[in-house]
Image (cartoon, rainbow, N blue to C red; front, side):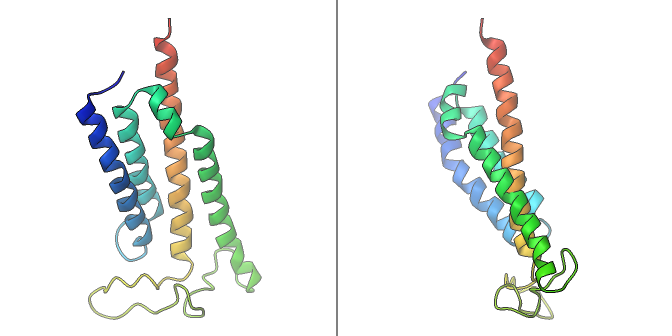
Amino acid sequence: MKMTKIVRTTADVFYPFCLVFGLYVVMHGHLTPGGGFQGGAVMATGAALLLVAHAYEDITGRLRKTAMKILEAIGLMMFLFAGLSGLLFERPFMGNWMAFTGKWFSHPVAHGPNPGDLNTAGLLPLLNIGVGIEVLGGLTIILLYMLSGIHAEKKP
C-alpha cells in the first residue's frame, strides 16, 4: 500500500537527516549520552520511515537485504579488528592502545565544560562506528523481513 505523495516526499526528505543525526550520535558517543547502538537505531529509524511511506516493490529497490547484510558484516568486522588491534601492540583484547599515543583520537579531554573534541578516547570512537554500522544493518534487515512477511500474506 502506498501512502500519499506528501507522506512519501516527507519521508524521502527526512531520511538523510535521520542518517546524519544517527552519525552525529555515533561520533559523539564517547563524549555525550549515546554511542554506536543508539546512533545505529536512529539511522535504522530513517529506514523504517521509508518502509512505512513507500510500497514494498518501491522500497526493496532502494534498501536491499544483501546490502544490509554486508553493512552488518562490515560493522562486526570493524568492531572485531579494532578489538584485536590491541594484541598487535602488546595490549589485551580491546586494549585502548590509541589513547594518548597516536595522532588519531589521542588528545586528552580538557578540564571544565566539555568542548566536544572528537579526538579523544582512543579506540572507543572506532568501536562506536563499528557498532553503529552493525546496528543499522541488523535493524534494517529485521524491518525488511517483517515487511516481506506482510507482503507475502497479501498475495492471493
